[in-house]
Image 1: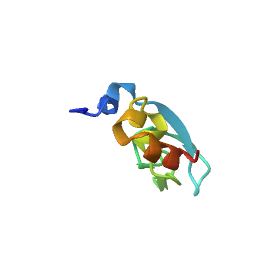
Image 2: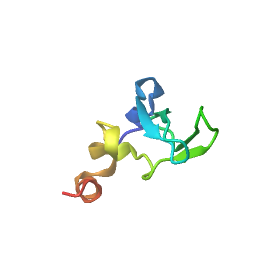
Image 3: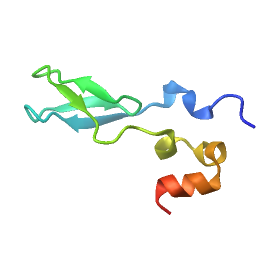
Image 4: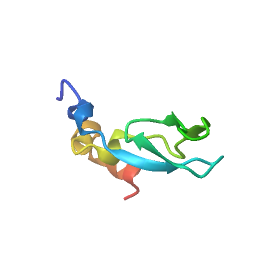
Length: 75
């Protein structure tokens, strides 16, 4: 059993670009963020899909179990 999720180390969060639907500016968003304000037009930019530890955490398979992991990953 895991006491603490090993994926909670936010020092490993990455940065991605996300396009603002109002002004087409490529804003930066951290991999653990759901939404950001556009630095150009101040519009709210939201991810299409909410981030999930299953997508990025190497320990997710052990944390949630093989069957659930395959279900969420589509295989």
